Length: 188
Image (cartoon, rainbow, N blue to C red; front, side, top):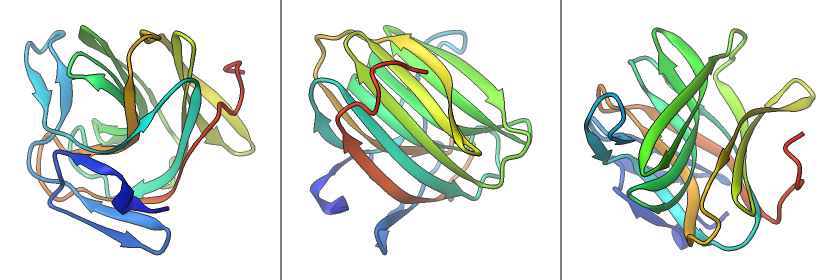
C-alpha cells in the first residue's frame, strides 16, 4: 500500500508506514460529529483519503490502544461536512463497541458492544447504489452491523480514520487496507 498516494484531512500528531501498514497517533480532542443531540459540529478527526467512484468495498484490519471515552478508529466515506459515514471501534464506558455514525445532514450513532474483543478488528464498508453497509469479521463470518442510505449522486473520498475526542495520543495501526470493486452486492 502506498500511503503517500493518499491525502490527510486533519493530519494527525504522527503517521508513519510500518511494513505494509500505517501507525497513526491522534491529536488532542479530535472527532467527527454533526449536530444531533449534542448540538455541536466536529470535523477535526483524522482521515487519510483517496477518491472512490461507483460501487466499491473498502476493507481494513486494525488495532489500537483504546483507553479513554470515545477513542475510535476504522473507516470513513466522505462527500462533505454533512454527508459521511464513519465506522469501526469506539471505546464507550470502558468497552469496545462496533460503532457506526451516518451523517446525511445530521449525524446519527449506533453501537454494539464486542464482548470478546481482542484489540484487533477486520472491517468492511461497501457502497452499492444508494446504500452503504458496514460489516465486521467475527470468527469465520462477516456480520452486518448497519445498512444505511447514502446519496448515490455524491462523489466521495474513502479511507482509514481515527479520533480521540477526550485526549491526544491514541495509537492505531492499520495493518491492511484495500479498495476494490464490491465484494458482494448483498449485505448478507
